[in-house]
Amino acid sequence: MMNLRLPEAPPIYDMGWGSALVRALSQVLEAQIGPKPLPRFVKARLPKAEPWSGCIVYLVDGTNNQHLIVSDGGAWRYPDGALV
Image (cartoon, rainbow, N blue to C red):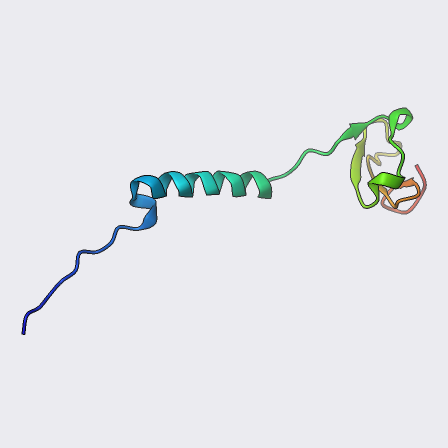
């Protein structure tokens, strides 16, 4: 009986086009998973809350060290629920 050995296929990341593809995909994933900067506003320039329901922004001139605010669809609120 003849013993046939097939050559091992190189992993995709070692192939010419594969390594570029894997690099590109990892860069896209890293960009999507990494931290995102929040839009920054001063209180006087906040947009209307209605179209931004569920969104978070950074309030540059927040008081008592409260800088993150959330739109509930009707108003901008601090995380504790107080109105901005």
